[in-house]
Length: 392
Ligand SMILES: *Cc1c(COP(=O)(O)O)cnc(C)c1O
Image 1 (cartoon, rainbow, N blue to C red):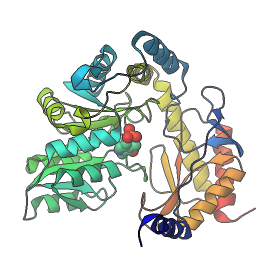
Image 2 (image 1 turned 30 degrees about the horizontal axis):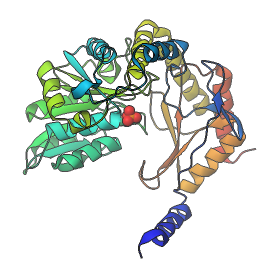
Image 3 (image 1 turned 90 degrees about the horizontal axis):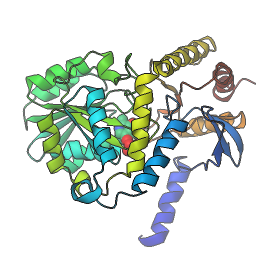
C-alpha cells in the first residue's frame, strides 16, 4: 500500500499504541516570572519547559531583542559566510568563549544543527563514533550522517565506553555524550570518559544543553561541577534555548578546533544566520546568568524541596539532582493518563514516550524552574500523588 491510505494506516497504528503527539497552543502567559500557561483548557502551571532560570520572558531579553531589531533588522539575510554575520553575533561568540573559558565559540542556529556539525566534522567513514545509549537524538543523527560506524555504550558507564574504544575494528574518532541527560536528569561520568578519549586520541564532545547556566556556582555547567578543563573536553556544545531563555546554540573550543569546524560544518555553511535580535537576547541572558547567581540558588532549592516532598509522598523518582526529575510510569497509556489528570488539576507536565525514551519506560518528565513558588511545588506533588497513585 502506498500514498495517503498507507499514511492513514500508519497514523492509526501510532494512535492505537498511544504514541500520537499533540500540541498544546499557549495563548498567553502569566506575569513575567510566573510559570503560568494560558490555554483553551484553562491556565496551567508549567512544569515541562526548559526555561530553568525563568529568563525566556524576562524584560531584559525582550528589550535587547527589540533594540537590536530596530537597529539591525529582523533577519540576517544570508549565511554567516556570506553577509549574514553581524556585530551582535561576533560579540555573543566572544562572550560565550570567555564564559566557557575557551579560545573561541561558533554560533549555530540550533543545538540540533550544532551536533550535526560536530559529528560530521570530527568523524567519518572508516572510523567509529562512541555515544552513550541515552544520548540526545541530534548526536545520534549526526553520527549516522557522518558515515562513521556508530557504537553505543551502556548509559553513563565509562567502563563500557572504554571497552568499546579498546575493541578491535575501526579506530574511535569521537566519544560523545550529554552532560546532563535530557530525559533522565543524571550526569555523564565526564572525568572517566575524558581519560578514555585521551588514551585513544579520540575527540570528546560534551553536549551540555541542560547543564550550562544551571550547574556549578558560576553556571558553567557539568564541566564546572566535575572540574574538567578545556583540554579534557575539546568540544563543548551549548544551547541557548533552555536555561538562557533565548534560541540558538554554540560550540566552544580551541581556536584551531573551531576554525576547522567552521570550514567543514555543512549546517553552518548552508543555512541562514540566526537573526541578530536573537543573538542580542542571548547576550542579555548571558549577562543575567553571570550576574544573578540567586537564580541558580533558587532553582537548586526548588529541586531539593520537590524531591523532599515527593519522597515523603511515596513518589519514586529517578535518581537526579538536576532540575529534570523523571517519574517512570511504564506504559504510554499510563503516562498519558497521568498527564491528563495533572492538566485537570492545573499543571502542565508532559508524558514522554517512545521513541524519545525506551519502550516501557514512558514517564512524566518534571522540569523545575527558579521561578516556581513553594505553593506551586507543593500543589504539584499533591496532584502527582492523585494522578499517578490512584488516591483521591
Ligand atoms: C534540546 C537539546 C538539543 C537541541 O537543541 P536545540 O537548540 O533545541 O535544537 C541538543 N542536545 C540536547 C541534549 C538537548 O536537550
